[in-house]
Image 1 (tube, helix red, strand yellow):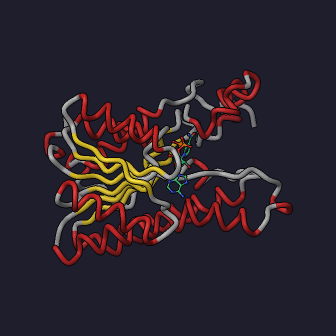
Image 2 (image 1 turned 180 degrees about the vertical axis):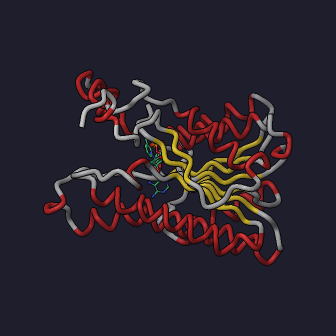
Length: 261
Ligand code: NAD
């Protein structure tokens, strides 16, 4: 238990499934109140809200597109209207489009950047504009990826966006440290969520992914949620501008693991 989190209000973007849903459930275990954003999967978000309420917690599901300013503003308003404030903002929503880079349409390129990078900017901007006039401390947690560091052919738009999230996090952390607003980044490796469902349904691709991980196993969304709850809590009160990798060692150049090279 992180007792300082009791009663705190969190907004989680892209919370209807996968990592975002897992963070919502984990935060609720700390007696936090959660705004669960969904884009199209209302049923998934409602399911998470029901699960939280059944366990005595409080949550609300709100539809919004994080790549639109009115979308993130609606999430902030929902936090204020339903729970009377907002303490933690998790920019989790993300998506990827696979394509050789010379074939990527401008439309797809912009879509990936709009959701994965501009969505993080808009969410952070909304949170900052809420906290600053009140002189309130706060914590922003951005969901990046090991691909903020590891190049990923045929996913250039995604890797570019996540690389941007890393430097955005670090810049914001420095800019707002004097106001005690912490900004951190989580970089998951390969996690078992709907984003990977098709790939992991194929035993060959599942095995190939596992072979890229020194710990030789795919991660669970709960592994990421456990990192998020620590970053949200006072236990990490002296941590800002950091990336916490939750990847079973994936970024450690596993091709060298047998002493080759
Ligand atoms: P997921 O597909 O299960 O969930 C992504 C969520 O983002 C969904 O709820 C989706 O509706 C939401 N979303 C997409 N576009 C949106 C928009 N415009 N507005 C609001 N919500 C939107 O995937 P996940 O694995 O849970 O991914 C969560 C985050 O973790 C993403 O940022 C992803 O890039 C990152 N990540 C995942 C992995 C992994 O292996 N699963 C690895 C590294 C990073």
